[in-house]
Image 1: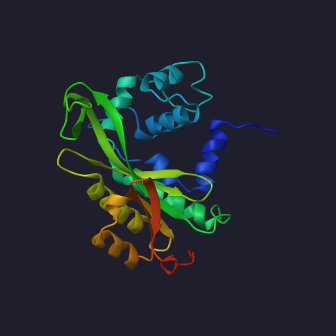
Image 2 (image 1 turned 45 degrees about the horizontal axis):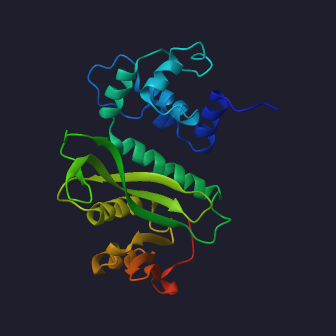
Length: 248
C-alpha cells in the first residue's frame, strides 16, 4: 500500500478540495519577486503537514536533499518566507478556505453531525517588549504594569462536526474590541459560506446584544452564548425553533 507523499497531498487538494487555482496563484504583494508565490506557499503547507512550523525549519527542509521529494522547485531562505507572508494578501486565502469548507459540505463530510456550528472567540498571537505596529496591545500584570505587547484576534471555526476547523481571523488593535472584530468576522463568514451553511453560533456572553442577536435571527442562526453567573458560566441558547434544518 502506498503511503502519504507530497504528490498524493497535491492530488487531494486539487481533485477533492478543488484548490488548484489558489495553489497556483495565492496572491503576492511583493515587488519584483524572483521566487514564484506558489513555490513558497507549497513549502509552507508542507512545513505544516510535517510539523515544521518555523521559517527556519522550512528553510532547512528546502535546502536539504529531500527538496526534490517534496516537489519544491528551488531552495530559499527564511527571510524570503518572512517577506512573502508579510505582504501576502488575505482575501485569496480566505476565499480558498471558504471554498474548501463548502466543498466539504457538498461531499457530505459533515453529515454524521446533526448540526453545523460556528464558534467565535478571541485569541492572542506573538509577544514583544515594545509596541512595533498599530495592532500591538499592551499586556498588563496583576498590578496593572505593562509587561509586553501582543496581537489580539477574533477567530472563527467550524464546530460540532467531529472536527474543529478554524478558517478566518480578524485582528483588532488598541481602542477596539473582540466584540467588534467578532461581528465583522461572522458577517464575512456568512457572506463567504452562504446563509444556510451553519445552524448555530457559539459566542461569549458579551455578544448577547440586540444587534448581534438580530443579525443571527435574520440569517436563521441559533445562538449559544456563555453568560457569566456567580457560580461560573451557563449556556443560554435561543429558542430551538431558531435553529433551521440544514440545506446546501
